[in-house]
Image (cartoon, rainbow, N blue to C red; front, top):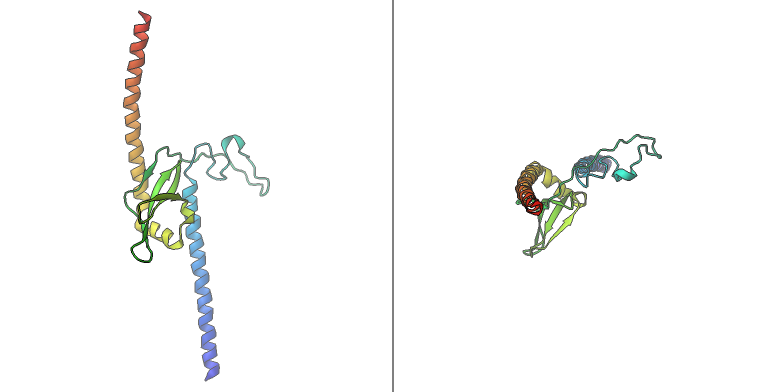
Length: 179
């Protein structure tokens, strides 16, 4: 009887190890996918593939011999925070931390708000596995990117109107100066 129980325990332990390994593999896949998304955004003089600045960009990696043609990152020049948290961590008592998507310093970041309303910015890749899972399940990424695109359009329109006014002012001053 004891031998059968030992076999059962060994079988269960094998299942636990196998399932733990699967979980680690899927977690790594999730992190790699998030990192690919994050790497798309940043200053436009940085390469999406290797991160080098354009002026320092090597067209061949010496270590691997792989060719890397410069592709600029998508530069989002506005500061914007999503209006809906995709993840909330509840701590002891009433303390909680809310996580929002944000564009900060041209990069896709996480705006982390503590229970006192203080916001700091962290890299998406520094988020816990549960946080990354919540981000994908929430569907906020696509909605936030749409919001950022709309905000860029609005800001662009605003600058268009202001630049037209500035151009008229410059023309008027130039005409007065000719007289």
